[in-house]
Image 1 (cartoon, rainbow, N blue to C red):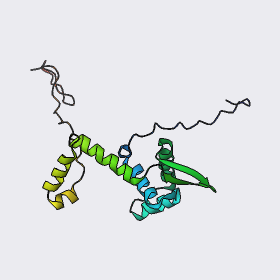
Image 2 (cartoon, rainbow, N blue to C red):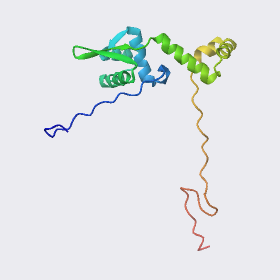
Image 3 (cartoon, helix red, strand yellow):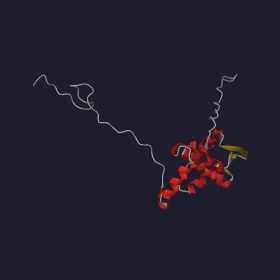
Image 4 (spheres, helix red, strand yellow):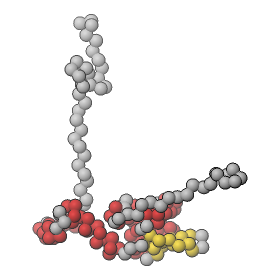
Length: 163
């Protein structure tokens, strides 16, 4: 509180900087792609580009995403008039190298030759159409009674006193 009894505005804490770009959520990565393409962009320009790419978003949504990217250290921003201009802190080529390195490490045990062999052995159409594999969800077990003689959850209990 200030001396006049007015509460102080809450300060935004910076996020911990990301070690790699591939850790960014998809929407943040889409905004980064626009910044990389344009070199420097405002929220309005980023929003217009995303809308042109069939991803219409509210101005405030893009503004929030860019603020988060700034606090994570992925973009630098400078004030120009009433708006902010954003530039990427590191180039797209570095981000790509980090992402490929992570792919090799996680799926090919650190072997670039294994990745090359996979790509050379797979049909071209399969490589072009390949999509990330979703993690398998655990199998759903049917609910059963936890104790003998007790009905499963959601089942009616049979009154055997009248039988």
